[in-house]
Length: 210
Image (tube, rainbow, N blue to C red; front, top):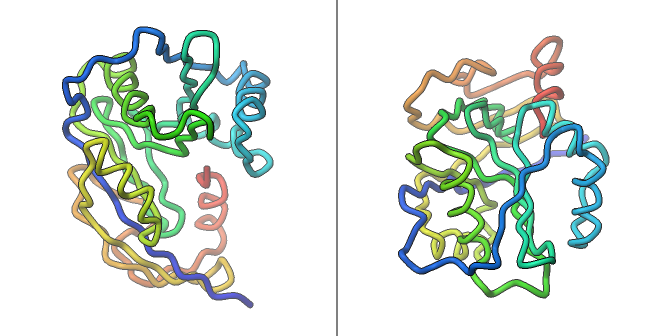
């Protein structure tokens, strides 16, 4: 029986465009669920490892996938939750995302292209091209991952919350109080500090993990 500790930073950005021009060669392409083979090829091209079945689960949960081109080369990829829910499985919170905001999931920049602010450029393109109006972007990062938090701050994010939980054998959760959220959060019993994952709750949890 294992005990896992989770410690996350929840970050928000209200302004992604710092006024610097984007490179003309940058292009954001969205792939659809029926283009799964191209998603998997993108992962291979970038050298990005992923758990078996994860892209399928993300599409099933209506996340959007994009890949960033620099001229004729794919240099980065991103998943976002926009107009759907972001399920933070470490805390079993299912946070609704409006159409004018998105939650960043699993940005991956090819190693040879890191250090060129492509993370921020990718987010700017998502906000400009996938959203009719932009209000905010959210992301979550392990609290101990100082490098990722620094990259987020450089891209315009601020840490809004630090949240923690204990996970006993994937069944019993002790978690921090639900953060203030502008829209109603209804699953999974979000205001209960202790959560026992069984029956329908466990089935929903497994369906939503993406």
